[in-house]
Structure formats: structure tokens, C-alpha cells
Amino acid sequence: MVSMQASASRPQDEDAMPLKVMTVLPPRERFAVGEAGAISLLVQRMAAPGEIVVGLPPDSAPFAGISFLPVQRVFRPFSRIHRYAGGVARLARQVQPDLLEVHNRPDVALALRKLCPTVPVVLVLHNDPCGMRRARTSGERDKLGQAVAIVAVSEWVRSRFVSQNVKACVRVLPNSLTMASLPAQPDQREKRLLFAGRVVADKGADAFVAACAQILPRYPEWRADMIGADRFGPDSPETPFLAALRPKAIEAGVVLHGYQPHEVVLNAMAHDAIVVVPSRWPEPFGMSALEAMGCGAALVASRKGSLPDVVGDTGLYADPDDLPKLVQVIERLMRDEPLRQTLGQDARQRAWLFDTTIVREKRRLLHQDIVREWRWKGTFHA
Image (cartoon, rainbow, N blue to C red; front, side, top):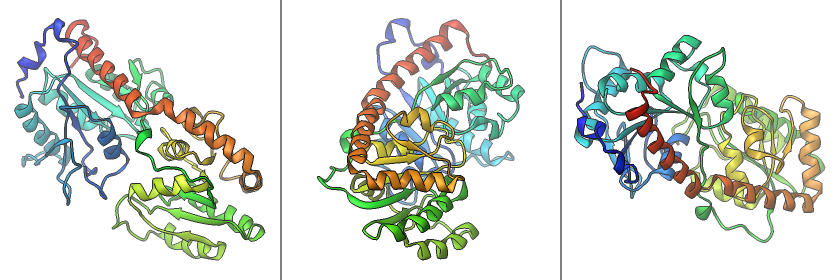
């Protein structure tokens, strides 16, 4: 067991003092430029002064300006996840944090709850918990909600956690976007349709290509680009889905750029006229949509998952499996430049609601509230 008595005995009058937070990445995330997935990018944006991020060592230098400690797995006859959690607990023994924030891994959160029994453990859920190990059943989620504090990135994720009559306190803290760091917008946007995200069926990549195949021949002044691969990173494999999609994209006139660094994606969103987010799966949040909004692009999105909560009335909607409707909505924006400008401006204004400065302060207050409840109210039980 990891003894953390100093953290557990934090006096009430110190509630206004900054908490020492240790943020635990999922084992597959890498905290470095060119290697980071969506969660690492969010953690990098949200890290407060003095916060320590831990995860498996990246191949290159970690993000600058943030304290990062590599996790060395504890070699014991346990599962891979328990060896990872053991490595995190070893670092926690050194750091003595006031709070452990675990991202997207209920199994890691539960393991750390046992290894660090006096430290509040927060589990931040970025995806549907009903598909996660140690959270698939209502009984598992009931136990999870008693053991650790649960934070969801959207109301949709929260509703999934409490489905099947699960009784748990689940707070919602949305993902953020640092508006001040986004690329400058040009006076005139390029007549280009953009898909940016994982090139998989769940994201509607094939629906985008199919729509472009009908649209582009009628609008020769327009182009279409796809940025992304099956997964994050330059070494993403050529999957059967991508191999089948590639010739269709070429025939439709869609240029496939493959995986690109995050700044390249944002630059494209800032310059292209229309961004299409035709997701089939219920988006737990919809970060690509928010980034497009922050960059002032006109947006076409599906109504899956949390996308309507993020986009609101600042974009147009279409079902990716209703090809005529998808084509109709995209063409409407292509023909109406004033509408594109209005939606882009409204979207950028709405994106400010998710600015990192605002969400980071909400996170700080949430952390203080969780530590206070953990210490005094007994809301959570091991």
C-alpha cells in the first residue's frame, strides 16, 4: 500500500491552496508532439501549474513546460494493467499528490484506489463507459461510482454511465479548446471540403467520399481533402477499410493526406470553407467539431452522441447514411457564402464557451470539491 497521510490530512483552511494533481494517462497514450492522441492533447491544454502528468515514456521529448514522469511498469505476476498501476503508485509515493486524475481507464482507477487508499481518485471518462472493462454492467458501474469520483466529458457520457438505474454522482466537465492558440483566419477561405479525423467507418469517412463523388463534378472550382488515418501517429497501418476507400477517394477527386500533426489539421480548418463531421458512432464529445468551430469554419455534422450539444445551432446536420440529404446539406453551404460566413462566426463565438481558461477554472473548482467531499462527507467508499 502507498501511504499518503500528509495528503489525506490536508486542513480545511487550505482549500483555497492549489492542489497537487497527478494526471494518469491511459497506457496507450504518449505525451509528446507527433505521438499524442486526443486525450494527451487535452491533458496538455488543461494542465495547471505544478501538475504532474504520468504515462508510458514517449519515443521523443515530452511536451515542454509540463512536468512529466515516465511510468515504469512493476514486474510482478499481475496483469499488464496492474503492472502499469503499480508503476503509477510508485511515482505517487514520491510525489505525494492531493488527487489522482485517471483518464478513461476504470480498471486503472480501481487499481489505484486500492494501492493509494488515502488519496482521492478521479476517473475522467472520454468514451462510452458501457464498453469499458470494469464498467460494462450496471453492477460494475455502481461499484465504480462508489469507489472513485466520476467525471464525464459530456452529458451523453454521463447518461450512459447512469443507464440501467445506476445510482452514482457523475459530474460533467467538457473538453476544452485554447482559442488564443488557434491559427489566424484568412479574409477569404478556400473553396474546399475537409474531413479531419480517423479514417474509419464509425467516423463516416466513406460517407464523405461518397458525397464528394456526387458533389465535386458539379462544382469544379471546389476541392476536397481528407486528413487522418486509422489511428494517431505516422506509423498508422493500411487497414482493409482504408485500402478499399483509397481508390474510391481518388476517383471522387478527394485528396488523402494521411496522418498529419495537430497543427496541420488546425491550419486546414482555419483556411477551408467547410468541415464535415459525418460520424456514425455516438460521439462522446466531438472534438473535431469543436476545433472546426473554433477555427471559424462552416460545419456539417451528424446528430450522433454529444455532437448536437457541442455544435448547437451553429452548424447544419445530416445523417451520414442518408446520402441524398448529406449531399443536399453540403451543397447548400457551397452555394451560399453568406450562410457559411454567418455559421462560421456563430460557431467561433460558441467555441469560446469551451475555452481552456474557462474549463480549467471549472476543473480546479471541481477538484477542490471532490477532495472536500472525499475527506468529510464520505461520499465515496472503497
